[in-house]
Each structure stands twice: as C-alpha cells, then as structure tokens.
Length: 298
Image 1 (cartoon, rainbow, N blue to C red):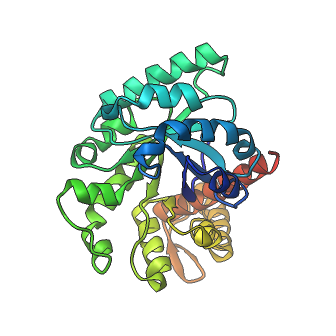
Image 2 (image 1 turned 180 degrees about the vertical axis):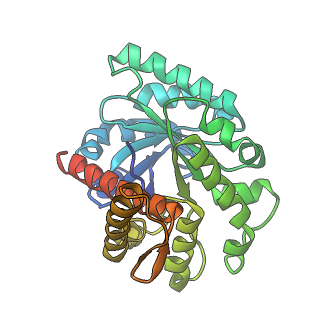
C-alpha cells in the first residue's frame, strides 16, 4: 500500500533539510542524490544521507532515495552506500525503458540479500522525465512488482522536448503528458504522482484539482508550505464521503438487492458507474486512514 499525496524532494547533501523534512506531514520524502545535489558534493552526500537515515526513518513520511541515473556510472555506489533499514524505496531517475527498471530490480534484490533486508521490501517509484520514458510509460510501470508509483518529471521532460517551460503557459502545454502518465498508472495498478507546479501561487489549488481529475493521486511539491493543503486536495472531502456513502447504500439496497432501475440520490440519477465512483471514494479514504494509522506508529 502506498499513499503519496505529497512528495517532497530533499537534497541528500543537507543534514538539516533531511531532518527537517522528516518532521513534516508529507507522505513521502525523496532524499535526492541526483539533481538536487551539486556534482562536487555527490560522493560526500552519500555519507550525509546514511548518517541521517535513522532520524529520517523516525519521521512520519515514507523515505525514498533517488540515486544518480544509470548513465552516470554512480548508481551502484549510491545504492550500496545508502539502501538499508529505514529506506522504504528508490526513485528511479532518467529511465528510458523497462530494461532500466529490471536492472534496478536486480540490484535491489542483491542489496536485500547482502544486507539481510526482507526480500522485495525496497519499493520503486519511477520518474517519467523524457520522451522515451513517456512513450514507454505503461511498459516501465509494469516491469517490476516493486513499482508502486510513477512520477511525472515535468521540468526534465520539457528539457528533453527542447522546450523552455514558461510558467505562464506550463499547465496548458503539458496536460497531454500529465494525462498519459495518469492513464498508464491506472492501467498498471500503481499510483500517479503529478509534477510540481510552477505557475502563479493563486493557481495551485485549481491546477492540482485538475490533475486529480486526470487521475493523479498526489503531487511533487517544490514548496513545503503547501503540504497540508495538498494533502487535503487529494483526500476525499466530507461532502464527497457523504455522497459516496449515500449512493452506495441506496444502490446496494435497491439496485443490487432488489433489481430496481431509475434510482436517484438527492435528485441525481444513479447508475452503475456512479456507484463505482462512490466505491472508489470509500476505498481511497480507507487507504488513507490505514496509511495515517501506520505512519503514526513510527
């Protein structure tokens, strides 16, 4: 089970930022050895991450590590130095196809065996941040049973498309890619995590709800002050839960139980697809409540 309403990238080279992020209400923190760690600090950052992993693991958020991509030649050393008890998973960067995911699966299996970790315990979240990955998104999402989410890496995706991302139009010209990632995630049975928002601050809520309508279940946040708002936007509201419970009760009693048609709930026609949506709300809330309970035990 994974809940990833809020996904916070943290530079692995900063002990202060690692421990600070662990004390937030984020669902996932990503300790980043890749883009957020300057090249001269990448080797030292492994020690910083490892030395602060215990503190990070005591916090509420799930802890993921993003190693440098396979093309750098640093991935194996990053993983060997940082994957241990307290790490929930790995974020795979700069992948192109399923072979990159399979290779990571093999490496994680080797680390689990060598370090005495439970087999299959280290999960994967995949960054979709270039054209090849975007065209192979379903194939990469289904390449390993470790995969629990795919993340739209919007800025790197635009760079690969040779387009300068203009914050004024960013949300309009990336919606095809956002929708493709969400659809592939649903088909693969994993969570879709939307890319960070870089438009005007007043547009964050509307844009996030649009992404939720596309099928995203969480978002990368560049601004930690938005954690609580973002958590709430990806959590069914009291009104939605009331509607879901009412529709489910009516449909199960009258349609499933008695075979009646033409049902309405508070003036709204109720058909099987509406019942299915209601069930999704109930399932989502149950998953979030179970997640909250699990994380509160840390």
